Length: 456
Image (cartoon, rainbow, N blue to C red; front, side, top):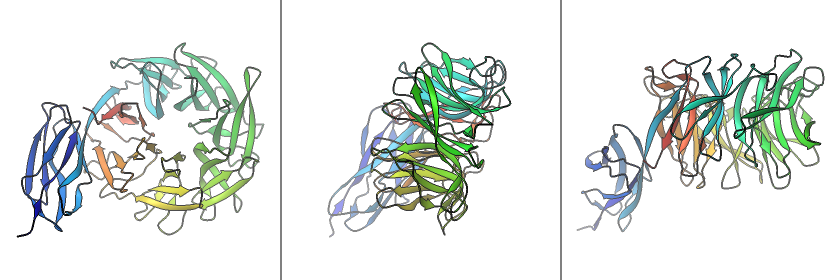
């Protein structure tokens, strides 16, 4: 008689009062009740060496979403104990009300030193020009700044990033001055003070309509991109250098759209240890579907990858992020097997790119407008603005670093006041809690802030 072995693992984050049913190989069910602590589990049916196992969630918890990692494979000569079940608790932290509150959250969130969440809405506020909002740890929301109600800041902000000194940086798309095509600003969350750092002029070829994600180096220099402007009107890469208490802009590259050059750079930049900058353009390149570019420390731009090849991605809308493996990752809106977008990986040592995920409307979803979040283990987290479910309102997904397996952590609903259509890059706190926004849904259908926690 062949030796038989157990199939089991650990479940984390299942709250007390919650329960799920796991199923192995389509028939062996195991019911687990939450305690709030990690639990070990083993299925009752033992399997012979060489047979397959396939653990799935047959019934989800009432107020949580659980996903299985390392749940399938072949039984070796020994027990399987590596199945991991992670239960994420979805909570809607805030539902925006519209003017004079925020309206349509835009861009990524930021965390200050006190645990407050800060972010921007494109509209709303006292003067309808957008807001910086704050959500305290206990859940209270307040408007920290209203754009258009003051001379500083411009109009229609698009997200925040945290600087090395705890100051927040962001961009706006317009200004009350018709000759200004957006601004870069800083915001001190303790003093609740906003300061203009740069105004993009329509007459100076210095860029127009800046992307929201700024990058800061060790000297406090800020790097960014603008979608348009520059000498050819097709966007620039710029930096803002501290000088005498002010900022001085330097255009590092002005895109032309010619062969070997792209147009319409989007998203933030990655700065490597050698001083090279990596970024993406939405358009241009050999396939006219955008490209990955490198700007060397001496200012030379190199087209290192053109999107648009068979099965490749196309038209990225978000910038790159550095992975734990030294490679760069990003998303594209189009391309892939189903032409619904991709997650891609670029190796800067070899100048090679490959597709990690082709978005499938029947499984994960489609139209990834936001970028990617990378955790300490190298797992990737992101959002699809449309979802594969009946309501097609978006999803949060994870790509496991060791296997490239894809897991949907949450699917958004269609019925108000539920949230839907996430488009911003996610952030994660030191405890592994994930935070994001949706552009619509909520009580007033003008957007929400949500969290997904794997720790109950």
